[in-house]
Amino acid sequence: MTRGLGLSPAGTPPAPPRDASTLLLVRGDAPEIFMVKRTGRASFMANAMVFPGGRVDAADHDAAWATRCAETPTAAARRLGLPPDEGPFALALLVAAARETFEEAGLLLARPRTGGPLVRFDAPETMARFAAHREALQTEAARFGPLLDAENLTLATDALVYLARWITPAVEPKRFDTRFFAARAPEGQIGTHDATETTASTWTSAADALAAYAEGALQLAPPTYRILLELSALRGTDAVLGLRGGAQPVTHAPLFDSTSGELTLLLPGDEAFDGPAGQRNRITLRGERWVSEGRGF
Image: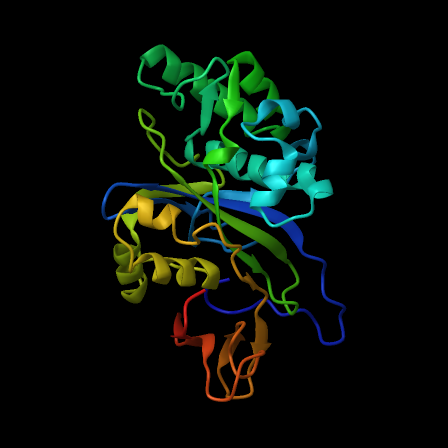
């Protein structure tokens, strides 16, 4: 959430987090990232600017994805730091990120099964055909696989780099275990919001998004805010994609703290989380905005 936490009633057991995936599509030297604004009707992060994404759907676990993706389940599990037997789950996370991005942003990371670069929507007839696919997919997630089959495409899961993982605090009534991925934006495609779950969209640098947030022009959730802070120090798409250098990102499961009179999310490495005395890694809500203190994510 952006302005505060929707706290569960005292004594209520924590809600189990649901698996979710988010994708940062990156382009250019700035670099720019595609972001969408969630509808005010959303039950989670309403009106916030976010990276396209959403929960993992049952259809994302379909065994057929093992033949539709650009990597094997075992390879996907290895990249995501999961045991080999969790390969189908690893693919489901990647599929969900790509599916939600096509639904919410109209950007598709897929290649012809015969080989070659990512699909382009340059021709008017191609653009119209994939717009129809997108509209159909928004009513049923299970249509994503058949869409790729009909177009003879392979989902480019190997293009997604594992960037971050955030788990909603236990005090929240609605929780997600979200993996954040990054990928180079496909050429020949134009990102647009879906006007249903999202009401606006833009390509923006991390620095510009943070400046707009500081001015009160947009809302950001804590994970989005911290990710943008780290990316604001980078120059070029390659720097973003190489940020982790193949290493697994730290899992952030913030702890809620209000002992100082301010709403604070404590993160790994903070002295009140698991770090040494005097070390800070936290986000505090001051007024209407989150303020970061300490190291990045």
